[in-house]
View 1 (cartoon, rainbow, N blue to C red):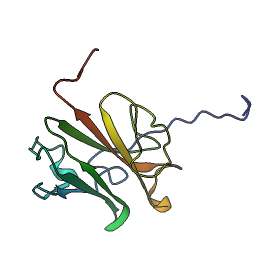
View 2: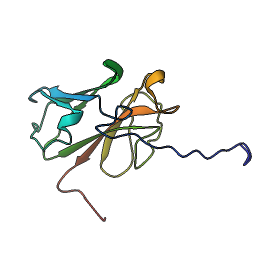
View 3: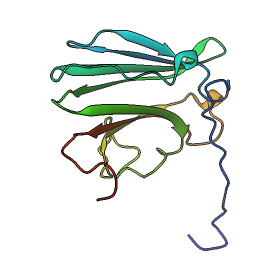
Length: 153
């Protein structure tokens, strides 16, 4: 691609929990083997911390609604580990904020190689509900073990 072919485009990410073009229609169900089922909506996020078992598997079912219909959805499942603090983030973007995974169009989960990242899931947003081309719904799962570096290493 030559310089004259490349066009810079400023993207405005819409991730407001009260924005209908953002995450206002977000629903997140958390459950799995040994995990008490919880349902979060945009109005209940961000949530307080809660305990999960040190073994088993966790399932996160993510749905994005707009105008009463589901415009993006997906399921993430991973094995839990002892003494690990898990954090999840949901966002609308062409790629997850903070870093690019090795392959942003690969099969879910997409493995990532930056600090604390465990896995990333990419869920398609219906074309008529996207704010721009290539926008997707992302679920980013981070893991921190207390014996691992958590800040400056």
